[in-house]
Image (spheres, rainbow, N blue to C red):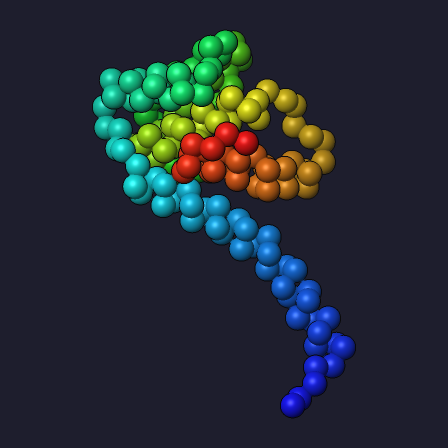
Length: 146
């Protein structure tokens, strides 16, 4: 039986440790994409408003003004913006489905758009990708509020 040298053990450990965050992000993206593909399509403005109101009610949002529409997004599916008047706007492009609306509403209900950006860009990056986005994906796919 061939034994592993300390150098190989360290290299394997480092490679494994570096792959965990990569696999974590891939799994959340996979769950999100699967949820989007299996979700109820939203094709008209009136249906979008109906879905938005149903999902707002499910989340118990009562004190925020939220609108939704179809348009161009920066990331491809859907995105939410906090407007200067304090209201929120969800814009859906390729993600014209209930799942995308649920995902963006979760960002609102958790207050992810209500705080100022952290001055450290690395901290913001990790908080978004390893806390905020996975929580929104879990709600989007399974309806579990974290």
